[in-house]
Amino acid sequence: MTKENEIVLDVNDRPGWLSWIGLSLQHMFSMFGSTVIVPLLVGLSPSIALFASGIGTLLHILITRGKIPAYMGSSFAFVTPMLALMKTTGIAGVQQGVIAVGLMYLIVALLVWLLGTAWIDHLLPPVVVGPIVIVIGLSLAGSAATDAMMKHGSYNLTYFLIALATLFLAIFFNMVLKGFLGMIPVLLAIVCGYLLSIGCGLVDLHAIAVAPWFKVPQFSFLGTETGFHFEWNAILVMAPIAFVTMTEHMGHLLVLGELTHRNFFKHPGLNRTLAGDGAASIAAGVVGGPAVTSYGENIGVMAITKIYSVYVIVGAALFAIAFAFINKLNVLIMQMPLPVIGGISFLLFGTIATSGIKVMVDDRLDLNEKRNLMIASVILVIGVGNAYLQIGAFQFTGVALATVIGIVLNLILPPASTTK
Figure 1 (cartoon, one colour):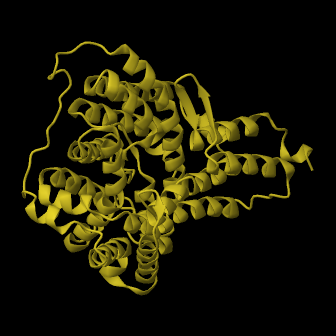
Figure 2 (figure 1 turned 60 degrees about the horizontal axis):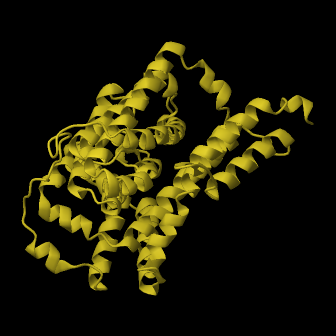
Figure 3 (figure 1 turned 45 degrees about the horizontal axis):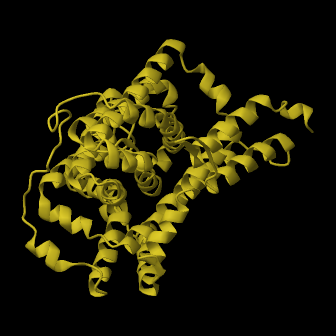
């Protein structure tokens, strides 16, 4: 069921053409920075990562029957192992590792299909869900602040002023503008922040001017460079981390479910959402891109605009695929100054966190109750503090660890009626 007064465009509502273009561009700009940063850190092609994100998003939407407005972007969870693999096995090992991640998703999706999803409501009540959603937003706060303040590792006042200007413009546009412009406050703020950055000399206009208009990404199809042979070390290193991103995936489903007043675990079903994620990563691995996952940045945009149309997400995916080939536009966005990304992220990530607070308020969760207080407190500090459990090369971090501990506490602590 939906609450019409809270939704501008529902999941299956299609916007007009002009609105559609603007809304889709807004989503593409929001995810662009993070999606291309991952391949730049690892040594993969940003254009291929952009292409893979678009293809992966379309696959996810197809598999979930167009019922979930989720955008699939490059996952940061695999940066460390991919860096190590690029030095040893090269891109062939990274590709096999990414495909192995996708296959792990498909295996778990099959198990969920066989066993059902009744266990989810038992494992994830509001006392667990609310703090986890808060953690998903706040765990990203550090990266937002770094982008907003730091230039080459040192504090930069100009950066921070641009970030604040971008943030306040996004708030202003969201509160004041009506009609079509009121639907794209994030995009407008990004454009204004970009223009302000140009005035401050933070954008390399020469690089944009000399860039060719079109360029085919250098795809690295699996097995075409040195012939195919199994890189078992890469597979064994990458595959287990899929369980970490699966917990993040479920957290994002919880956020989207709260925003749209739906239960995506039941319709279209967790088996389909996991299969969509898995297929997206397999496609990314085949063409030489990093593993992908659903993006909090795009969830933040939806939370601000209250536009949840899956058609808008499809448009963003198509723009991402096109931009992988339109090199000049690709370079234009690659020049996106970090303080602009940081300023917008303050709002996007904060909106996700407040959605978690809303879960707790709507459920009238009593934090005077010891059981609830213990569970919520532990999830928040472990998640926001990004505590991690490391065993050998395997690292279980942040949101995933907080989620697992929260679930365990909910299962083992005595019922509220016995702890008063």
